Image (tube, rainbow, N blue to C red; front, side, top):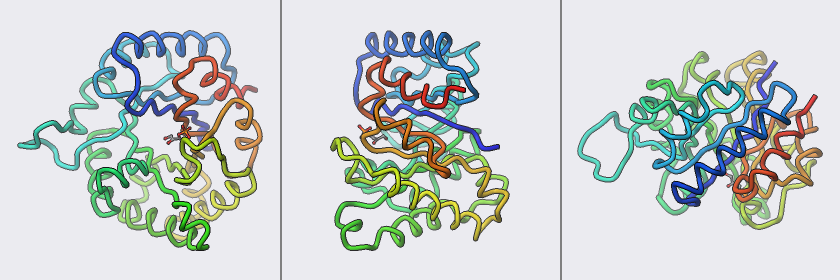
Length: 255
Ligand code: 13P
């Protein structure tokens, strides 16, 4: 059975003190209220990660993730953070290929393939993001876009390594806009992604791959989105900055 995951992406928000308070609230609420096997992941800015990993220690249902990692092991890359540094402070997950990194930092599929390799080599679990822009959605090319992002970024991996990935489908037009994909739109493309994975790695790997939806997910729409057959959880931006909203989204999987 594939894992259900609700992951928060704080993006560039929260100073150190506020981040620690928010995370502590999340840990306590998850302990008291989350009933099920869903994993709750918080992807925070670098400065928080060491402390959050310490706070998460002993709380198996909560994990810590980074939002990016450099593609090289180490070296003269001023201002960058490596995958091995992240794992050395207890980080478990790393978001790779978020559309904001693709758009503002010029990250392309080839670079993301390298980042995926180095993350895996250092024991991190990549949350690999794919998703089309509004123009691509309206132009009807969104299947092709998502297919090439997935294939060029991850299909060089061995079956064993691919099995460590989490895929996140985030339509760019739904991120931070308040416009969410309908559950039918999201299910359609999640099923397509799973079919592509099955074509490359076989049905067992495809059925075991966690595929998250991201884009204006909130406590009101999470139930319906997450009840779709191929949606295994969410990657949550704005709503992850409020402990109540974030944990309510995670509770959509309560058994
Ligand atoms: P919002 O939930 O704010 O739309 O952001 C989604 C996102 O980009 C998560 O990575």
